[in-house]
Image 1 (cartoon, rainbow, N blue to C red):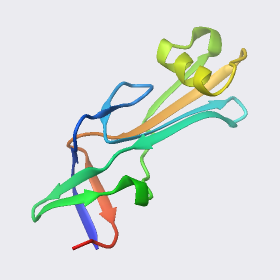
Image 2 (image 1 turned 45 degrees about the vertical axis):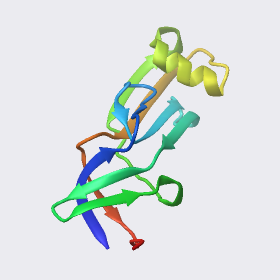
Image 3 (image 1 turned 30 degrees about the vertical axis):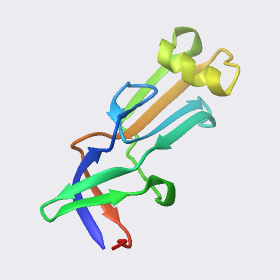
Image 4 (image 1 turned 60 degrees about the vertical axis):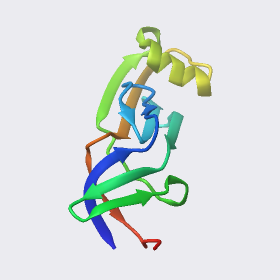
Length: 120
């Protein structure tokens, strides 16, 4: 079954680590200039998808969630923002060099497609 509808947050929204966007799910990635992932945080909680027929509950723990990494930044580690620096230091001891940051989220009201087997 496929449902296309708007994301509805259950409970308190998460806060995306790089953009501070309220969301139900985020994927944040930092890569060195060679394209090697040096830090990644992916987290989410259950959310609803609302379409014309009603609501569907998405259980993130048993789902394969894919988001578009639509927020993209680049900086030298010596010029990283506080949020970029926090992401890096939670995972590695940052060294000098250029870093690419990318983040994707599922935000309230965003149109998503969900494919799966419904539980009735």
